[in-house]
Image 1: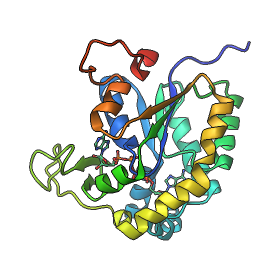
Image 2: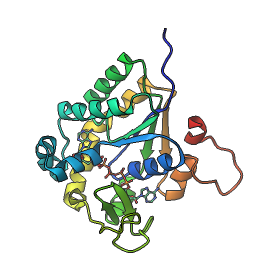
Image 3: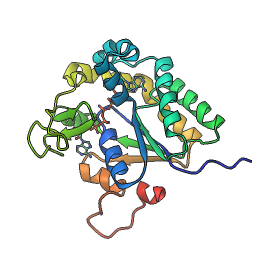
Image 4: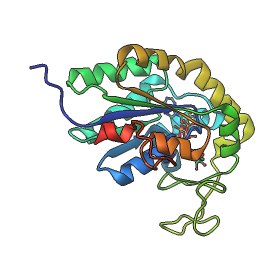
Length: 234
Ligand code: AP5
């Protein structure tokens, strides 16, 4: 009674383009952790022109947020798949209501969140990164022409298929996504700080190395032994 199910149940939280997908990809490469990106799920549904995809397409294209009801439906399906595993969710929750819904589902099953990583990156840094982002849509793999370039320009490292730009990465749509973050998503930070005071990790830093060092995926230049999220995972 009262014993929580073991395993990692982690959210990666941050502004659009803050590096959530990139950091998640590094973590799941190192550890046996399942991963869900609600953005990737939506892009696949849109590409497949499913019922969900048709409902979400115009909203995603305009930089707005898909309804909480539709998102919860998607996430519930994913959570069933994740049952009993360690997992990371990227892109959900994105509103206070989504956060409360997620908590109530997880708490009912006695498997509450136990790690929330907040990537805190300045807007100007993000804008520069987005203009250099290329993606492999079928897999969700992300590249950057300056930071993590593909081995062959314009081609996915694994399949060799062509990379593309995300349609919602234009400057106009991206600034709408940032605005949606500030209006609807940012209030979740306070909620997390209140609900999970000892599970919230904020990684600040505008350079690639600062974030990787804080995440424990790269050694600091000196032998300082700062704590990292990796030491909390393992
Ligand atoms: P989603 O796909 O979740 O988009 P996002 O939150 O805007 O995040 P991004 O995927 O753009 O960025 P990221 O933080 O993963 O950064 P990345 O690693 O690529 O959602 C898309 C849309 O779906 C939303 O706009 C909404 O419409 C809808 N949606 C999704 N979930 C929803 C929900 N729950 N509710 C309602 N609607 C929802 O990195 C960015 C770039 O920077 C890359 O080029 C990368 O190579 C580079 N980079 C990353 N890290 C570093 C680093 N440390 N140093 C240097 N460069 C770096």
